[in-house]
Structures are given as structure tokens and as C-alpha cells.
View 1: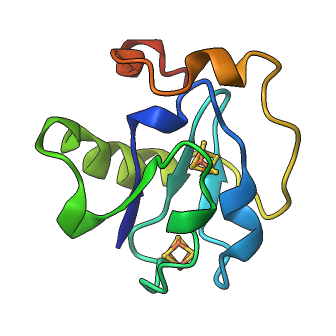
View 2: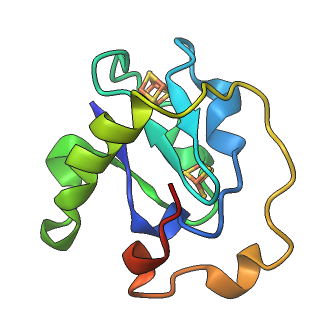
Length: 106
Ligand code: SF4
Ligand code: F3S
């Protein structure tokens, strides 16, 4: 499966959702997740993310392993998103910032 990691938090560009052939992205207030049981590993979304927040499960950095569980958990409770929407006005300022996990809103 593919996994959305920390760099998405507060950036949420949503380019990724437009290319997913199985519509398995789910949206929270400041982050998106991929449903691990629905993702078919097509890899189309990975290059679409302007902040490189999406990883193949195998390539998820060691310090982001918690995002495996977070994607699985939150995909069960958040609504599906299939159409791109404007990113937050301050998305650029948050790009690549460390420690964003603490800012994740549910
Ligand atoms: Fe969707 Fe393909 Fe990305 Fe999985 S890898 S989330 S199926 S676009
Ligand atoms: Fe997040 Fe990147 Fe998609 S910032 S919403 S994973 S395009």
C-alpha cells in the first residue's frame, strides 16, 4: 500500500486525489490518508504530491512508521475525497517543516 506521511500535515495540496483510480483518499481537517485495504499500489499518486508526502509502504522513513497505523485508522472515520480543492493559504510556509505530527487534527 501507499502511505501519506507527515509532510502532508498543514499542506494538503490534494493533487493526489485526482489520480487515484480507486478513490481511496480520505480527508481530515489538515491531512489526508490512504485506505490501506483499498489502495491497489498503482503508484500514480506519489509523484503528484508537491511536497513529496506520499510513500510506498516499503519506503516509508523509519521515523514515520506511525503513519502506517494513522492512515489505516483515520481512513475508517474520515470522508472520501476525490476532487482537488485549494490548499490552505499558508501551505507553503508549512512545507517540509519537522514536528508536524503534533499538529494533526482529527
Ligand atoms: Fe490510489 Fe494508486 Fe495512490 Fe494507491 S498508489 S492511493 S491506488 S493512486
Ligand atoms: Fe497531502 Fe500531498 Fe496529497 S500534501 S493532500 S499528500 S498532494
